[in-house]
Image 1 (cartoon, rainbow, N blue to C red):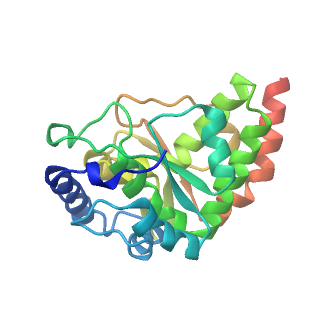
Image 2: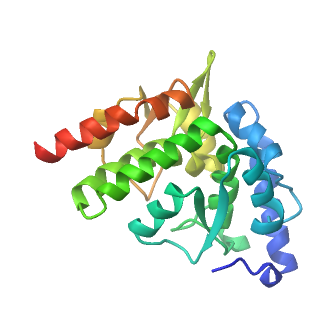
Length: 241
């Protein structure tokens, strides 16, 4: 499918601006520098819902060879990982309403684009996404394997934290697009914040209906990509154990 930009109403544009400006007001000092650089590099604007073909994709193609691929909503695992293995990031085209600013039961365009697309300007992060998707496709018929890979995706791409110098920062799109979890993930004393550990992560179920109980912290985006051989090896071992 394609993004039909003409369907967005003036009120949709206002909702986008409300969401964008609210998050951008709090992300400096909390978001990863790679993400903040990516917001600029990929051409996001406060007063304009991004046009995938006109606004985002030309920048992404130049930066890392990726592009945003319009989808109806949640898609099957085979399609999801197949797109990302080919440098296409799936993003829905519908935007939440004014009465849904703080919570949605499923991802909308603000989550998919604002939360994730800026990180697609980082080459090491993109290399990790491609490699992880390739592993997923090799195990696509194994529910157990996909469940473990989904945990890894959840705790990194969606809800990951990174240590940048002396500071803990956010790179997970699920946090970056959430006004409440942005502060909670860094400053609340409720969740655990633990070092990135492939085996522990693959075994750790995640939750979808409230803030996370723990976050995994990486040292760099290169660490993610360089952990791919360990991910494959550990996954294989867990599948036969």
